[in-house]
Length: 92
Image (cartoon, rainbow, N blue to C red; front, side):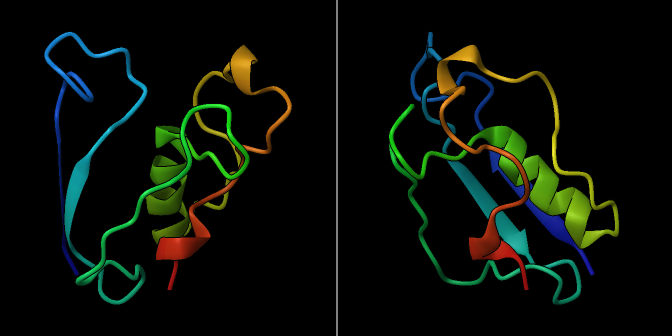
């Protein structure tokens, strides 16, 4: 029933721009997430299929029963992309 999430506090480099947020996820919240033994990489910023860190947080919220579709402030640079909802790739 546990989940450990490790991620850097400075994104992709020492003085990162926040364009990439590598993370390690251990556990699956009692089977509510599909996390084991996979490497996932999403398209770069503003490209079709791009997902945000907010989508990861929404996945965690959905896994524990909170079904909201938005988290945090919207990014004006992504106005033409749908960045709502959880990451379907990790939802059980």
